[in-house]
Image (cartoon, rainbow, N blue to C red; front, side, top):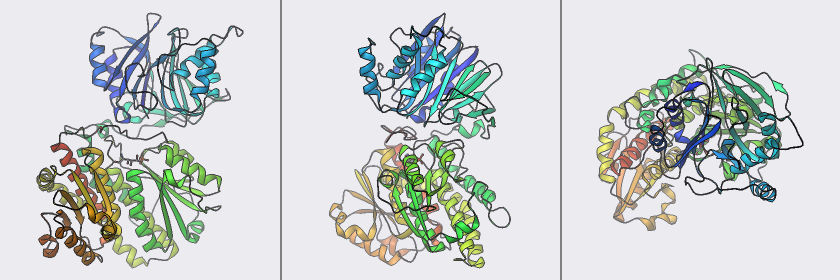
Length: 615
Ligand code: M6R
């Protein structure tokens, strides 16, 4: 997955484009580049590494003003992250330049065919084939008049896989062509100018109206003029939407990292979700389009998601089962899509995804739909592929999440699912009004408890500094906080690169206990819930083997405290089912401060990208 940015309009300094592209760097940061039409030629600048390098290079061309261009920031799939493989890619004559996000599955076959026709390739990417394919149709001598968009249309029909593209050509120097199939692309509508970008944050500084290009659609942009056609070549009327996000929301606001900013935003996000989906009385999920009768009759739910979103679904499994009397099956999407699940017509599948572009989750949804299942998605990004392909949606309302490590969207997903489970429990009468009222009261207090934790973040920092010297971690939890342990371990490993495993504490004795010695840090989630005593026994077992225990405990828990080297206090909620919303904040801070102490690249960890649009 990569980031695409494009511009057509008045001649403008490259710094504007760099600022747009920089807001997409979370999508990949292996290499970057720009192509523009300048003085009748394709002007090309590419770099391996991050965008600031490209910015430096372009300073040498300080005086250039660009009327039309495409830019790219890359997460490498085919070919190493060097300058040659960086986008934009060009055709043989360097007359056409393209940027691409996605994967071309049949590129080898196409490449061989084009080589036979005399095309010369210079990179190992799948992308370069698209430039040559467009060249092939554009220069087809049997057709006297072929426009750039027609050549692009012919080319994309030959491509298998998912792709969004930006295309320019010196032969049609005013046109910026945008293509979407399976990967996101948004058109920004400006005054005397238009933009394209893979995600909204890149457009916030420039436009207030956008078009979410639909699947298998092509936009032809000439300054402010926008024409959209489908893959059949028919013109269509796109829906123009207001941008609902503010620029400040996608800004670090003086903080060192987006991750820290996003951790601190959680109470605000939770309040927004609560007031939106539980206004005064009752529940209100505006995009939940299933009939009450359908929901009432449900006896089983399937959940599919990846990474952090999977952990959110795992927490939800516990309370959906408890509050709604449902069977809940959950799988990571890369397994879900290949399992022979007994999905029937009208089975409900909940797909959870921050980006709504995760390839495995989308594939699961498509697979489930072939069996007649209905899809409810929890998603943070309007206009994403998942939203477009779902029957119903609950938006997680967390605002843009820029840091690669998910934080606020995790608690937002869990919180939305709590509200949904209460709504379902009410419909199915598996929960009494009184119980629902009681849980709602506690849910409303969650932001206050989170604020308590955030106020004391300096304490977590002190402990994290101490623990940052450990070479490996085990995170242990039980019951509803077992997925919290999984999430805590994921957060730590992805941003600090320390090997960390999440485990159900009761399972330790079946193998993992062999790992424990004085060099192993063990993070135990040991809150005063129904499994507290069991957790204490597991901590004793770990301590007896000299493991260094950091415990997350409630106040006045001398027993757990005496077994631990350090403790972090978690506010006691009346209903411990809600504790994952607090534990998460604590473990996010812990991972953040460990990574900071180890001087890691927190917002852009190595080898990762924010949304994984490849299998
Ligand atoms: O956009 P999605 O929620 O579908 O992404 C799923 C995972 O790739 C994502 O949660 C990933 O695990 C995060 N980087 C973890 O912090």
